Structure formats: structure tokens, C-alpha cells
Image 1: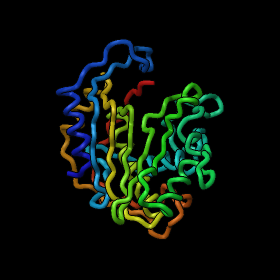
Image 2: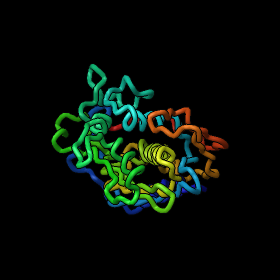
Image 3: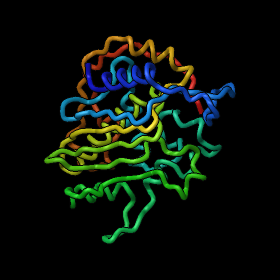
Image 4: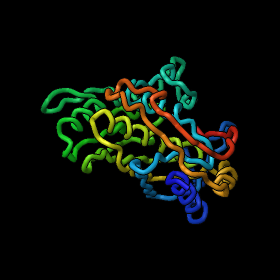
Length: 275
């Protein structure tokens, strides 16, 4: 059993057994207009050692290429338009032109002034890791209060803090809100992939990914699905490798990742997503 399965199963069990119901006034709605209530735990922290294995969950399949496509949409393309995305996961939040407003990739592409020049957040991370790897200031933050009113959805996974430990790149992913069924395993896989790509771009090895979740929750209509999922028997973690010939972050594609020996449980089928 790999770290992704352990973290997912333990977090979901804790929510189901010890979580708190949020059944008061809530923003999210189901497609039929019914309020989407949740059972939640506050302050969840999971750790994944990328030097030992890639955290790809096995009790259900995750399409790593699509997960990587979304993270590159944000971090590499710096786009806020779903026409630049290979999946349809953002369709419900896009306007008639495909835009999700000043969210996610838009924020990553905004240039900021520093003492040594102008950089957007991605280029600043790459610059500091190459030129000042001992810095404790290597981070990004998409939660721009000035632009929140122009975002279709406030950023859920909003901040990354990078820290070099020896010859390894470690990172903390801060997430204000995490839908355990729809997003948790997906987010873990794509941000682990991001650490791998950035590490290779700056001549480091991937280290530890720490995932900090303020509000980890299971939606009321998802509970039976999650209960079935966590009863499944996990498989060994697959082998995930990155094309070693690529050293420019902007040259990576979803096809740069190779997944081998990925045994997993059955798909869980379509389920409703609260919006």
C-alpha cells in the first residue's frame, strides 16, 4: 500500500468517524439546486516522500496525464481559459468565452517587481531555486484579495512554498478547501508531478511534498461512494518516471511522464459535483 492510498483512506475514515457536519447555510449547490452539505475535518496534514515513490492512488484510477495537463495549464501556460485545457473539469465555472476570470493561471502570469527585476511567480521560483537555493522565501500565492471578485472560483489549492534540503526539492502545498472524492487524489498527483518537473528544471531531486488542508470534506451525496472506496484493497504504488532529457520547465508536457505497473481498482463512475 502506497502513501497516497494510506493518506486518502485514513483521512476519509477520520472525517466519517470524527468529522463535523456542515449543514447550515452553505454556498455550494447540487445540480438540482439543493444545498450541498459536507462532513469535514479541520487542519489535515499529509506527507509524501517523492524520493521513495510517486503518490498515485490505486483504490481508484487517476489519469495522471490529465492531472498534469491541468497543472501545466496553471503553471506553464499561465492560462485562465478552458480552451487551453485538455479536460472539462472547469467547464461549470467558465463564461461564454471559456474564461474563469482572474483565477489560477492568470495569477501565475502576473509580473511583480522585485529588487532584482520583474518576474511572474513561476519564473521567480525557477530563478531563486537556480540562483539562491538557500532562500526561505521561495513561494507562490494565487489568493490575491484584490482580484477575488473577478474569479469564478476562489483558489482552493492556493500556495506553494519551496525549500531545498540537501540536493532535494521539498514543497508545502496549502489548500483552503479539499473535496476528498473529486479532488484530493488528483491534487496530490498533480502537485507531486509539479515538484518533479521543477526539481529537474533546476538540477535537484524530488524530495517531500507536504499537503496542508484547512477544510478536508466529504459531500453528503458522496459519502456512500467514499465508504465503498475505502473498503477496497490497495495495490502497490506504480512506477512513475519523468523524461530525463528535459531540463526546461516550459518544455514539459503530459507525455513527459511514464507510468508503469499501475494496478488499480475499478472506476467509480460519474458522480455529481457541487458548484
